[in-house]
Structures are given as C-alpha cells and as structure tokens.
Length: 491
Image (cartoon, rainbow, N blue to C red):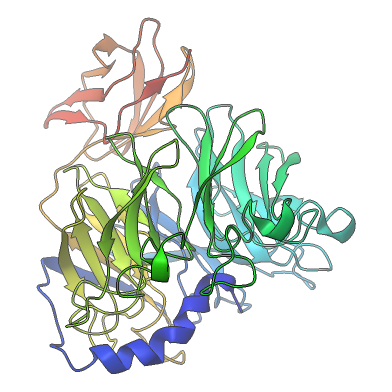
C-alpha cells in the first residue's frame, strides 16, 4: 500500500458521520477540468504545477499504458496529453508510481518514483523535458541494505545551492527513511537517516517533503517518531525538524505532546509552508480537539500553535483529515483540501485565514461524479485560479473512480511566478505568467533587469547587480504584474 494513503482506511467510519448532511457546498466557480479513466492514468497523486508554456504538469500514481503511473500535461482548457507511461521496459528500470514534479530554471521537470528502478523496486529520480523525454538520474537502494534510502513519495525541492532536496519513506541506516540531496546530474548524498536516536525521538517515516526557509535552513515533518504516548505507543506521533545546510539536524517539536493529542498528530502529506509572516504552517491527519486533524503554525525555534481543529462534533462542514498541507494565495489567505468531510462527505477545498477561520470553497458530492477524496495540495496558477486533484471519483472505469483534475476561480488576480525564487546576482531566472508578449519592463524590487520574452507565458532574465529582496515587477501592455512571493537575492 502507498503509505500516503494510509488515512483512507478511516474513510468508512467518517462517511457514516458525514453523508447525512447536505450534499453540496457553495461552488464558488468550480469546474471539473478532466476525468481520469485508467488508460490515461488513475490516482492523480500530486498537485499540478505550471510549466513555461502556460500548461500545467503533474503525475498519476497508477494507470497509464502499463498501469504504473504517468506524467501528463493539461491545458488551461482541460485538454490532457500523456507525456510518459512508466514501467515502459521489463522490470521497470525507469521507475513506477511517480510522486510529483518540480520545475527547474533549465525548463525541465525533475521528480521521483515510489517504486521501480533497480531489481528491488525502491524508486528513482528522473528528469523529463516538456516534450516527454525522460532520463533516469538515480535508482534508490544502490547501497547495501538501502542505506541511501527507498520509496521517495513527495516532490523534490530546489534549494538555493542549485541542488534538489528530498525525503524517502524507508531505507537509510536504520530503515526509517532519509533526507537527501541530489544534483541535476544524479549525484546523491544522504544527509540524515531517521530513527538515529533511542526510540526514534528524532522522527521516523518522513512522508512529507522538505523545504528551505528564508533563513537558509531546511524544515520538514515526520509521520511517526518523537515522544511515545498512548495514541502512538510504538514510535510517537511525528515531529517537526530543522536541518542546517551543513547537515546539523534538530527536532523542533514533538506532536501529540498535549493530552489527547489536542496539538495534532501524524503530519503525513505535503510540506511545510513558510508564509509571509515568517512562520511555518502545516496540517496533521489526526489529533486536534475532534481527532480529525489540525492546521498549525510553528516558529523556526519550535513554538507550535494550533490554529484550527477540523470536524467539530456537530458536523464536518469544515472537512476532516487535511492530508495535503497548505499554500498561501496572493490574497494572503491559506488554501488547502481535506480528504473527507465537507457538506457532501467526500472532502472539500477550503480557504483559511492565518488565524484559522475556514471558509469552504467546494464540497465534493456524495455521488463522487465531480471527484472524491482530495488528498493533494492545491496550486495557484498565474491567472489566479486554483487547481487541484481528487484521488478518486469521476469516471467509474476504476473502482471508486479514477480521479479528477479541478479548477476553482475565487476572484484572485493575476501575477507572475519566478523559478527559482532565490538567487545571486547573475543567476538565471524564468518568469511564468500570462499575456507576457509585449512586456516593456522587468525589475527586481525596483532594480531594472535585462530580459527576453520567450512566449506569452515565459520570460527569461537574470538577477541584476544591485538587486535587493522583494517583489519582481513586470510591466506589459495589460498592466503591471507582481510576483506572488518576494524574490530573495542571495549574498
């Protein structure tokens, strides 16, 4: 079983609690953009991301020509093109069950597969062009007893040093997962093997991905490990951690430190988000006042605050089991999904203030036609719309449905996105957006930069001398567009 789907075991119990409520929430401007049917993929297990051509790219965990997952491209109008079918060769040396994509400044996508690769099927790291040419960069379990890790489940993170960082669910020196870095050429270095301390107090099974904070350190969570308790008696209910670029590992917080896990337990999916206020935000699958998950914030020094407990006793209109984690929209609010609950019982997409007030955006229907069990982060495209996926529902050619891709328009405005969002003077940066043809100016926090318009959805530039940290501004025929986050100029 895919570890990231463990919480789906709880679905029947929660559905008994939720299916009796109203079948649909306010739709905002919701549209199902694509229905997977198995042949073109099933279980779209990662959030879509925007490519330089203005299309969105992502992966399915199963389905496709060989049943082992796909990489796909979907246009803003919902036309899907399969770029790659995994396990194209006997033994799956190219990998199986891909786990999301990361766009790099070279215009290519980098990702991992959960299975396949070498004979022990411990997963791979790959690069794929927007045209679908795939190159396998690394096969896990290349070292004795999988000391280099096994089964990576989340997208890679492109760090300020130009390397990609990630986690594996298993393997490592102790068999409880790893943190690693890998170059664009495929040279991998294991940085930390979990459960290195007695009773795994440093954490175990990092089912969520790692990210880099504005202080240069890396932050993440583990689904288990930490302090043993009655709820999680074997290893603990998970930890939040910090890792310096030099490899020093520190446990910041032990989940389920409070009575009845009121502070949350088992942070399984997605990654931490560093919001504009500097704090890190995330979700837990379990725990909280109602034992159906929490949203929390945590400082870089480990002070944790629960901002929302999901599924109050009267109803689950605000959702339950928020597996995927959160993003911050251009309006400053947080956005995410809950795998279950909502007025339809099959999960919902929601908006949340930084103080934890939830507004449902769309509740997935009890019949599942529009999708069910959204278990991935949403993504804000540069036209302002939110895109996401459901793991099931939609087409009935798969048991329970093969999953969907959806879009929500919530009145958020257009912006530009920089890839990467940090770099030193002279570093190459690509700018993603809409209607960029005819752009007449580009500046990094007020410092003008040379640039070249590649297409209506892409500009190439470099960090100019004298640039300081702040918004990127693009001036064009349709007005001025700002970047969704500050571009950080590295010293």
